[in-house]
View 1 (cartoon, rainbow, N blue to C red):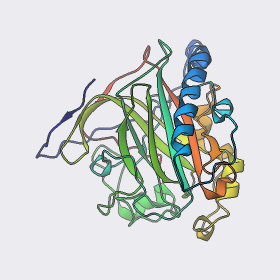
View 2: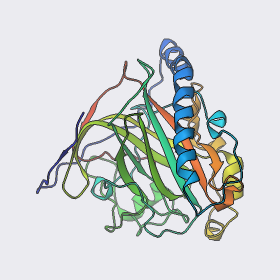
View 3: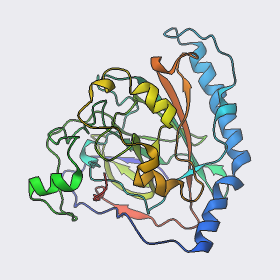
Length: 323
């Protein structure tokens, strides 16, 4: 799984990542429910390595005063968040703006966030090295880059009516070429990658979330975007409500008063991802060891269900009706 770096001149046709609404069989639900637990000891070992690496980085960082020596890996989940092809990629995926980089902030205001993402093969309980992790999410006031001309306060179906658009493979809602809070980066030999950004805000009808995909056999263009790949996981990551409540009271999040924030408990995607006992919420620790309002480190381990995965060959990412 080596990435080839070369430029491709012509744009490729868009594909579709569908949001499957079919009901899973009881046997499939049972099978999936046990997947994350069977690798718990392997995830715990990965978490210990992550803590060691993070502590070494923090020890040399003069930006923050290290006052807490608690082993952060002990508070991390020892189960995995399983992202599957049934979960939507959403309409704000825009591969032309997803570039190979770790710092995706681009000056966006908000609470600093470092995302530490591990990827594990649930068939072997081994880390997956050199797979490409792809993330994108909205800014502090609910807008996605490349779609800043769209109101984050207008329900999606109403927005489609206003624009006289319909759902389909040719749906294109992008309004500009901004790229903030989007990025792709491969996992290291330990199956871990990280991104620097801000805590997401929220938009209408959705709780706070981060879109994530995992790709293998990927090809990267000279400009850092994905030319082609096999998409092996698609899903969304969330913040716990107590964390969200505390951070959304801060500026610039607090200035987003035009709509009420949707809670995880009523978010359809969150409910779908937790239906089988999986936990798609980030484990959060304060960046400075003291106060999450000064910045957070969010940890999660994504489990790839390789026994049942459907490799989605894509040139450009898909579009779905659910944001």
